[in-house]
Length: 297
Image (cartoon, rainbow, N blue to C red; front, side, top):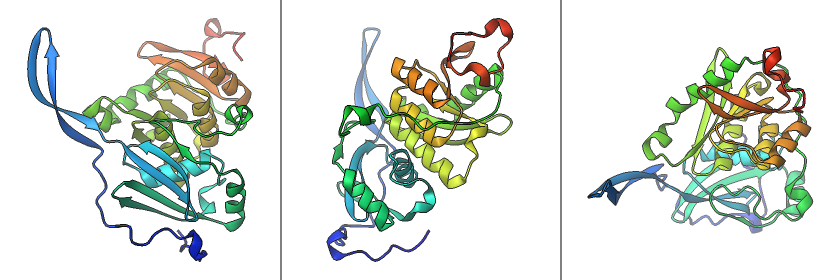
């Protein structure tokens, strides 16, 4: 990672902010009263933490997202990639995460030419947990096509089921709280190579995109696993990740299906222990002839 480039004083972030605060824990124990089967009892439950995360570029605030306080550096990189602010991790000149009283700041520095382009379309983004389309400036921007994915590979139905089965035991924060989403990258024969959890499904996927970019994975070889429903923005982010197959536990929206079909992505959803449904490009799944659906895009 390179040193932070010199910037005009007007762009500098305040230097008197505390920079040695410990990060918030990902979960906390809270008191609660439980009512079950007509019986009332007191006790505690572990709940996920949720904090505002400010994403800044060259000292200028770009977005504030509510997120789990984990993997923030990966979140920042993934956000920059999925938003199209940079095309690769190498285009971020410097990145640091600062814990402040109000939350967390993820400070990134990019080339001045990139910053000028960002400033031209910059808008204030402040949204609820997992909001993926806050602040878009037009309907066209909201439904913009995903990048075209040209990933080869053929996966057996067993590989899809094995991938989802491998995901569950690794969701440590969800085991503790039962309240967060996960996104993971899986390769047959290698297992889950990267996983991210967050109170927001979009945030979890952004964190995964950042992890994969840092690790330099050839994501065309594997599957994207999601514990959430699949909406258009999840498909758009998957296209940035570069995977050819999405496997999700919940159902997709109709717009997500159309977007995946146009992007060349195989969309598998409603993945359960006994099977799943394929909505687009079934050619990447090694189905027996009787299982193929000729009308699927």
